[in-house]
Length: 461
Picture 1 (tube, rainbow, N blue to C red):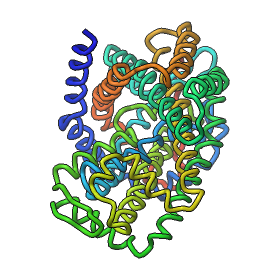
Picture 2: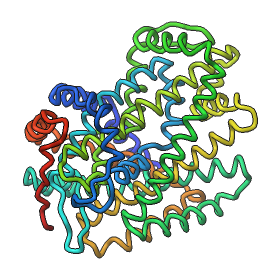
Picture 3: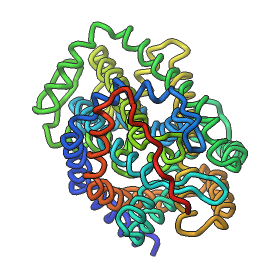
Picture 4: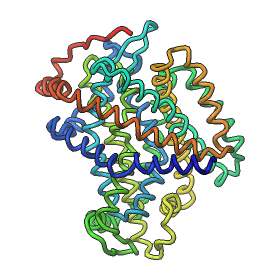
């Protein structure tokens, strides 16, 4: 019976994460890029600056930077390290280019979904800010039923995508590298998670503000060291990536391009999974930010996709491709697993390489646990009320404790499917509210000194 259920869910998962979903998300990225007049140029020139500019007089629970790092905590995960390697193994080096392009265009979607999250956020009786696709669908489009579906999908997905899989990854790494029993890892992570998440968004954001910059800089420095060691191969690697993104064939170091379809499929899929643009998760954190105008916070939030995919995933891709080109003995049999390939790349740094990779995976995974705990809270509160928060937190902690020692394959598969289903109502909200988003964006962009930063009215829940 269990095998039959697993087979059905696996089939559904293959459909919802198949080409139709990839085309829907990538098509939305391109459409919104055009509609916003290539908002990406303002993400770089203005969004990054705004992300570290405090706006304490505006309504909100946490700073712009805290909201951004909370979202980054949930999106920068093991996929940035192991997932890129898997994309290269399955789609060839050309997958790196498609992953990167998905990130570049995905900035526009992250901007749009964050805009509507802040635009239609609500203030609860106890002063908390809440927003996301569910509120945009409810308040902006009078489609509460669809908002309810989004909240249900995201709330239940948090247990698998945000918690169980991440804790399992931490337990595996700790057991293989330090000999720590998985049971002990689960208990430790559960305790640490409980301490943080019972403090709400302010507690989660404080941890993420410190953890995210540290883990990102730590990992990127490791990548830079490897690229310095492989500097002779950087330019050839870039050429190979661009060439094999469109054509089949072989290149130096045993690299093989499997054709444009495979490179696009696995590269685009990895980019979408990595930055979550279009899924509607990150805007939930954006809605809690102190901001006087939805455009400001949308610009800040869109930098998350830039850092996650355009920077971190690209760095990982270059590290892996240059490593293969430098070591022709690495053949297809050795790189059929993304984790193995990444481990081989970081082993080039004597002594410190494996430590950097191990600590990076642990930090990335744990930060995802915290970020998704907040997403899940906001979603279950939307469809179940405030009374359900404590039971949700307790269940989340229990899942974290047992994840390393219990077979949760079916749970993870269901959560992955729910994760994909989140995208449908979110994309509906983004597209149907795009006219309003474009109008207010143009108004704001016309004055880059932000003189039109008039406070937005906050709806009382």
